[in-house]
Figure 1: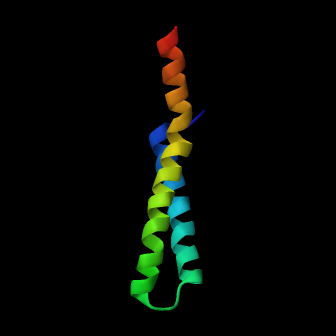
Figure 2: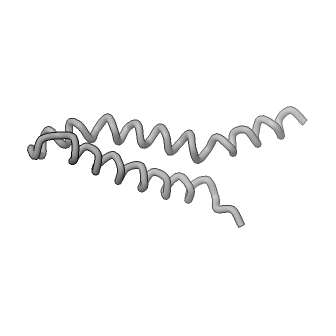
Length: 68
């Protein structure tokens, strides 16, 4: 049983978001503002990657059904 794309999106976003915050905490100095500055672009990248990972299959199926 495959999960819906929305649930898959939430799970992937949570995983990528946790990785982004952890990576920014490791790379940046211990200043909270600097960690936020490092984390913001990584969180945007995590959002983009989770959308692409979750909905790419759904979009391909939609295009395939539209051609038939």
